Image (cartoon, rainbow, N blue to C red; front, side, top):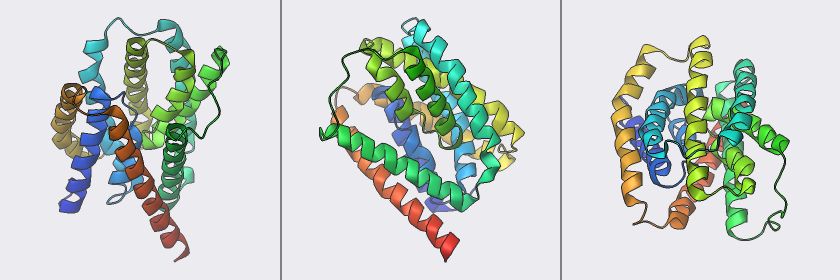
Length: 255
């Protein structure tokens, strides 16, 4: 378990933001956690620490949404996401730590810019026809892949599900169930890749109660804080830390 106080500052911020997002704002900020922790530890270690915490968060929020998810969509989403997880596991050792930092930074900036483009109204109009099942499956596969290495499955899942125009409660419930299954599925390849060291598991155990509190805090403050301002802050923050990760990675690679 790390004795670096800077690590714990970043860890507390990461777990708090992700937990509040999961509890009260749709859970799209798993993408923030790994970039934050990767500022003070290796990206692989950061992802391994966060995975058990995410699972605890998922089960904390699952009970409140029972019975309201869309079974048809989940039948398309989950098998495709599992394929993405397998691809992520098989390609895991192709990147060095700095290569992963650069990849995480690129993913973070891509998702952050995509969010801001939509918020500023710079993207084209919404399609009038519902996309077919293969649209859902393809983006679910991308979600499984990005979720495996950096827990960044939220934005691709949104691309898969938002055009389906589900009722808000069904959308939220489907998202919660999806990530519960996806995060549980990642445990086997993480174990296979020797990511769960004793220090990783102890660190996760120490942070897990904060994750539960953050989820409950998100539920409580949902009506008190503007969702738009919460995400504006978080996605601006994501752009900054992603840019910093790319800078660190490139500096280490090229000196």
